[in-house]
Length: 142
Image (tube, helix red, strand yellow):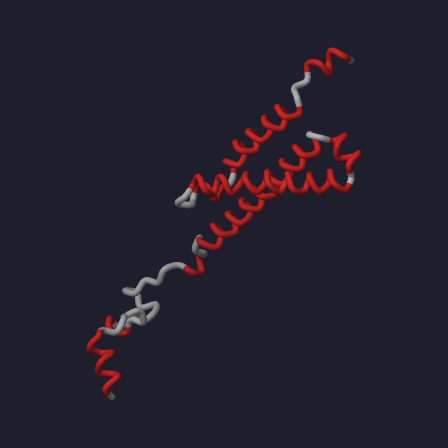
């Protein structure tokens, strides 16, 4: 029993190893690969997880001292991994929902204007055409 306790790493070392593992596992967030600032999204994936773990486990230690101290650092490590898992799975669900909405269905297929399926819009009927300064000045004189 004494030999097994002597060979186990310290709690700070265990916590540090798992924190690095959480940082590496945060790369599974799909939003990292589609955002322009990839490092910021990666930091926003694991940073709040570690902060929330510290706050939640700190409050637990404050109110339930014996149980929390007995479970340290295993309880904090498990909480951090669960929070990261929920965050990454939630982002994967949002990613899949967004990509399924972005893909056009067969009913939304592009219309072939040459076959006469619908009348093509006239060139001067563009709703996105902006006013010129002359048109705006002429409208204000009326």
